[in-house]
Image (cartoon, rainbow, N blue to C red; front, top):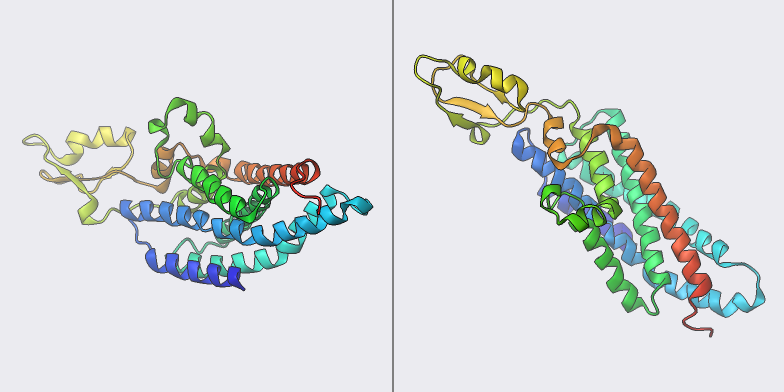
Length: 290
């Protein structure tokens, strides 16, 4: 019930924080950070499984002398038993959060976001179990899980632009962050081909040379650049919006719409890796045999 309450309250808090995101450049940024915060909420899923997994591990170690079943069977059963409740509570969060924030109501985009969030939640579940398997106590696992989540979040490209990352981290931790793949998939899917209309306070203004309109002065440039000029026929105070469509925004993060399904497969690969790490840790790391 604790996980259910966390998902419901988390969905309400984030939904109210990003209530009915409006169009414009500010809306694009809000949508990105709404998705980012939804991903960070999954750390609660990882921490929720730690106490029960540690308890079940003690039982497994105690009974392992009978050779009734191996580490692989133990780990797979621990994952399988959590899935129905995990999918249910994650769906509750999705319904509350998604529609309060005003994301796209196109059926394909709704279904894709739900699928991606469920897969991310399963990743968090298996990550928590992996941290538990390599830790001696609940306290150690409870420290390792948020630490891993923090590293994943920092190198997801949402907080620190790719160009500002040190080279060694740009080519290592960035590609090892599940959040990077998740955010690229859901944000690019939500913003693909979405028309951007800047609000008046978001427009950049400049004056063309004398006896020239905004279109005559900057029309050719804006055709090859991103964004648009709101008043091409005006002879003063040209109003420029930095994005014409949502694609121009998320491409500044080096994200691509065509990577959506590839990224889903990569997330499934992370889940498989977590399960393998958990099984190996259970098999070879014996903190206690009683």
